[in-house]
Image 1 (spheres, rainbow, N blue to C red):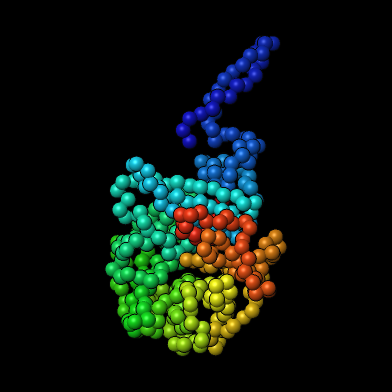
Image 2 (tube, rainbow, N blue to C red; image 1 turned 180 degrees about the horizontal axis):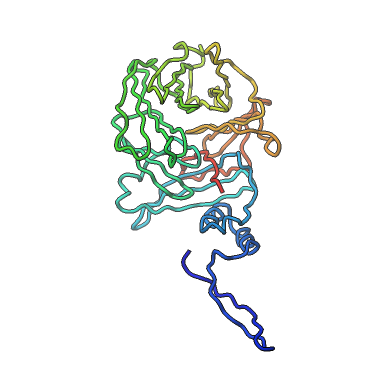
Length: 360
């Protein structure tokens, strides 16, 4: 850490008292002083504060629901010289919010400006613009670019933290107008995506993609479920083509992975949902009317969170975005309600994404 603080000490010399000044590094601030400073910062600022040096990580942070995702709104703003990526974070407690600005360098403008979020995991976002994909961490503002992709994909996601050597990106292109389906994978640091592989697909639009235990699972219209094993680069269709007769998806269906279990949430009307749980033995989706002790958050990437103890009030709820507000559907009352702890969206209608809070 650059710079130093001046410390005055009272020194006894031959019966006389005098002041002696000495320079001490800022990293030597006592923990109680660090806590006084930290409690005056909001949560995102506490994150940056604790990243300054090893000793400052000893400061205490405001307790939060660690397992609940935050709501992030993302927009692009302009001034005379710059384009800014603006992220507003809304915490599910006490209506706390924080806004971060990331000015894009001139050489980044054409590549990054206008990109849309297609996946959110581990506090990282996967964004896409045409054939370009890149990771972005809105907390640290770090960008990791991926090579250009030679297919226009429908859905994409990734397996683990992008800074991990185990991270694999997955992209799929499938259409109801063609029986051909294209898959491709890539790891951060690769110079190109793996050869785009063509498979015989279900001739249906892909609705959602999730990752679990070395496999990317893809759900298609009407519930057909396929699996791509990363280790073997092998694709297989796990179900019949039409698994949920009559369940025509009027809008995007969401698949959620939770401890190895797959859930499928289908919109039913404007403010209702039908929930299905995958039966691994029968290879079928079974209708269910309960989530157990958990809540689901639907978005470009959907999350399942435990709803026990201090978060038990979230149980049996499905949180989603609609129009200018965030709402939740209760499986107990079969009704939707507006969230009181997430703000309404302003007239600019920014992208709304659930994002996992940073590790701090």
